[in-house]
Image 1: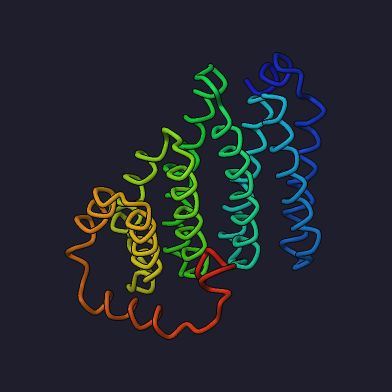
Image 2 (image 1 turned 90 degrees about the vertical axis):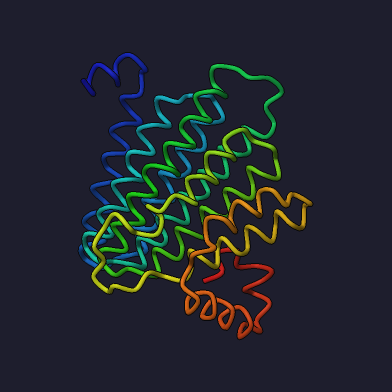
Length: 250
């Protein structure tokens, strides 16, 4: 059980701290005191990143459990701004994982487990939250999620991290399009196609036409009106923030 887990890995203090973070988070989200909600999320992220630096995956896992609870609670309470901030902090944790993986000289048990955790988070948890947000009509959260996943795929590709192939295939999986769920608004967000287009552009820029063609194959049956809508969105943007600074593209 959880008590034995905390005793075995000697993380009692951290576990109690995370519980307090969650209690603070739920009470402040319910009261619309978002500054304190954001503080609880950020402190959880700091704890998760610190645990990676000392290779404490037991503590890292319970920190990730808290992040999952934060996202789900925000979506259930229809607090989209909080959910987006959760995902922003969550992505920073993933960036910390990638930092550890890209500097790995050789495969070790820690690195192997970290690769597995990365895939579990992005291809399992994030798929669930994407579809949950889609059901609730939280399209801005969907947009943030898909562009965050694109950012992670790009980083694993650039740093030649083994998880890249599985992450790309996860993005091309129809589940990311919400096909397994009945959506309230009936219209799927164009951000999915836009993210794939930007990812394919990166592959072409780096001379990897095969990966770009994988994306083409997965999207060639996309309705023409969606492609035209995405094209118009891209061409109507005149702010450098979209292209240079805001990699979420939202």
